[in-house]
Length: 154
Image (cartoon, rainbow, N blue to C red; front, side):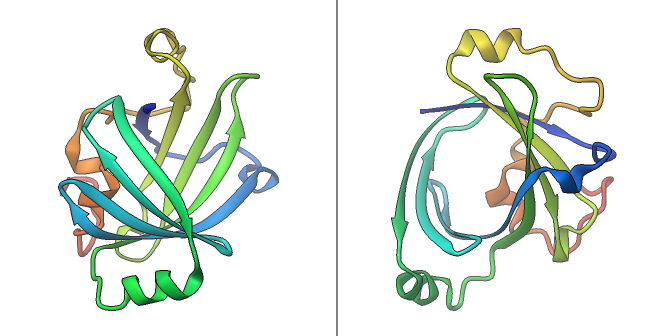
């Protein structure tokens, strides 16, 4: 189970490049239920997510590059992004996604929690923007279908 809150970002934290980062490409085989494949740096994964909002069931398994390449061939619903990991406390990390290509200009931040109580009591940093946890438009599966991003469009 995944407990997570998601927010928009108008700007990135100062010195963002000093934090760990990964290059990610996600392709969606199915959006309902959400079935995706992901290349994260030099590793490959298949993930199934069920549900919407703050709490979702998630199962992820590592796959090999050959299977990933077989599956991604012909899939148009893709998201490309750089993910930065910014520690917020000893228990929480901000996962900042800076989107590329058709979603250029979009920046989001997600924070995962161990419990619902932690998620509800989370003190939102002042550099976080509008919360979009429950806005289906900002699910990556739906973002993958957008041809060109503009703030007013979503």
